Image (cartoon, rainbow over all chains, first blue to last red):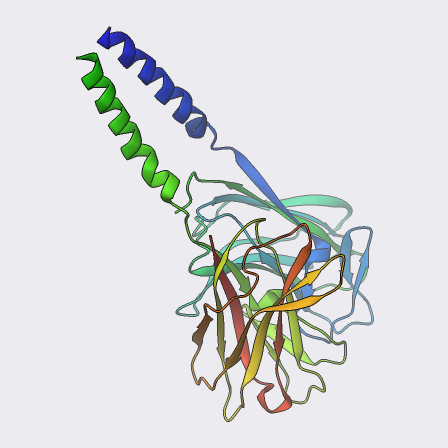
Length: 169
Length: 162
């Protein structure tokens, strides 16, 4: 009789905890181009059909930034960048974090576009430094450098893949 | 014997689940300086390394950032990370909510940032309407920098909630 009740309890335990163990699913945060903001007032960006580009009338070499909000304790596994670069490697995207107490900025991931192609492409970086998200100490943001002007250099968004941890940090 | 075992099992269960149930964990939303944007197109501003500032020559000096918190979250604390430059005078930071149906804007928390040569964290626990209600309200932070404080650096706003 004791053995039977132990068995039932073991089963309940398994049913309760097994889903959370196997639930380490990869999730996505998709940040569209329209979420990106200018770093200062000079550059002139164009926004159309979900993508962004630096206009010919703008001063050259400009940047955009975007806030990143991920769940506490999430493990970042990869970044995917949707872009078009028909010039000479005109886009560079970086993911950073900044410490709230010592103001240290650290780089997590980076991607430089490959030029000379008029079609939309997907770039990626899966070598992430400091992949575990800590919102209590850090804020996270993206920095997009645009070194080419005109519609030959377009950016449509970035997807951050992560695995959410049960209970966070 | 069976009763004893059941008791032990119940105790194990309680030991396991009671801490989890009472763990109304404090969470953080950390809005970087890069999430802020001028409220007027005449503003002359710049940002770098997650920090934003208004140029001293700028005719306007207000910055804003949207705040996205989970439904039902209870805001416990608001922290501003900043530093002032030289003899800057103070500036203010306010957390607002705005009703989608009545258009009433309400102040939830407000702080006056004193002079700070190095980066400091200025906090307030004094928060009105602290329970987040996304069905009726949107939330945002406004930083108002007067002309004499225009060079102040804003590194971000952290909101602690449960």
